[in-house]
Image 1 (cartoon, rainbow, N blue to C red):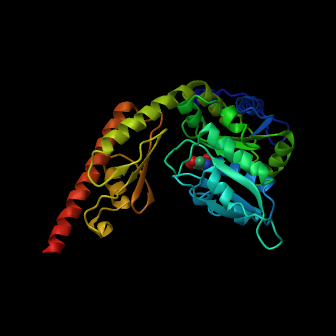
Image 2 (cartoon, rainbow, N blue to C red):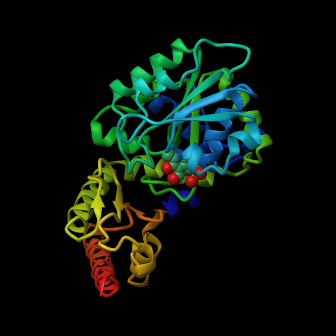
Length: 348
Ligand SMILES: Cc1ncc(COP(=O)(O)O)c(C=O)c1O
């Protein structure tokens, strides 16, 4: 990948075009079944450009309550585009069509917020890399059309959904007007994403990208990494998924943790089993476990005070993942034992 970047043919993508960026944009548009795509530095920029262009100021976005747009984009939709978010919670861990229909405010009136956009996320990061089936996507997309809403798909991790299900990214993307995909996650590029849609969207998105400070010059160096990721790393995603399943199987044997069976490359671990009701003060918090695993070379992310996330990726071999899982399991088991001891002494 580094060599491909060094050898990339470049131009000026703000001025008159960069040939490698054009190649990537054409390839991504074709893969996603859209007319045009636009290269961007980050996924967040792609989501926010989609919201800026398609959401009408002073209206609502309907999206999953655990979506990346809500939890990890620091209120950008309000700060930048004047959009209110209506978080939607489904029966299970993700938004579903029934919940979406309930969240839509009807009848439309002069006094209630009107929705202009529905955002979907697949795979769903906050739900532990869970996949929305093509049927589920279609049902929500159809509902959005009935509400006269446009549809944006945050597909930063859509490659994983495609590999896990065998459904093409184009079939998923067909459920939305615009789709974001990232190259800097499972595909292993250092930066980069594209947002794809029709030519009218593309023209507006290009202007928005410049306004947001995302116009890049010799960005072919970065596009080359994304192209390399598509050519060489796409097939490796299946291994990441298998490794996540291995990781989960090891960690779930530890006491005091509930592991969500991974559908792709994300493993969510809920530290629910402390026998001490004041578990956090007994050192049985997610932050404490993350600190202890990091000391032993395994990085996991704290999602809530009791929830940890691990992600498998191409830089961690199967052996690394198995060894890492044992470290995490040991740290949790150790904290569990200590919390039980504290509880016993409190009981005296
Ligand atoms: C679903 C989803 N959307 C968007 C993003 C944002 O991507 P970036 O970090 O490139 O801004 C992420 C990053 O983890 C993500 O998981």
